[in-house]
Length: 223
Image (cartoon, rainbow, N blue to C red; front, side):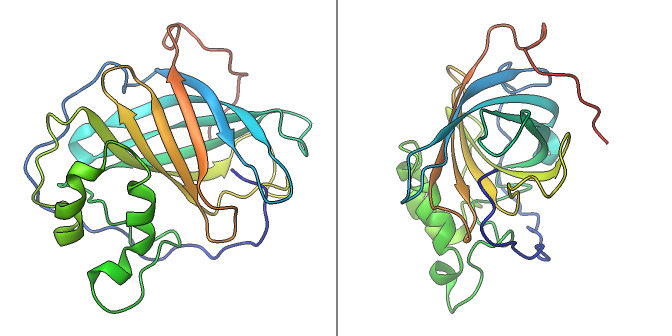
């Protein structure tokens, strides 16, 4: 949820279902109730800045490649309180979703596959765990990959609405996150994409030991 610069239009194109091999294996660190804590770097050319961020998974459905949760940003300069958003995620499983986004402002114009997925490739290749998959992703979006035993889970997170503040809070949720989750330690790395915000804003999260017993979130009602 970077600082709002220019309001982007709402996406109209949705990702189509693809037919791959098998789904990611269930992971206890990627399940309902798990909490994560870390930072998001929102630095710009004018100044260096990072916000503390808490995330909690509220729902997870591996069969349909879906998960959702809340994100709480603290020490946001223009906000009097922590800013909480509700997000929904797509799990890249080659069955429900591929590595090609095709919406939310990611490049979808031009001739040929590579011109259409330029933004996707630029962001996925930021993750050290992605290069072994690159050639197949360039060929078909990764449709033929078997990710069931891959030690990382790739996702896209899209914030849907502000939970505790209005849309005039000075922040934007027009973009989305490219996300990589480590199955071994539960760490999460992500990069925020919004053509109207500073590029490659990095999200870094670690799983917390007290995730399901209650993390230090304030109480908010999700509509």
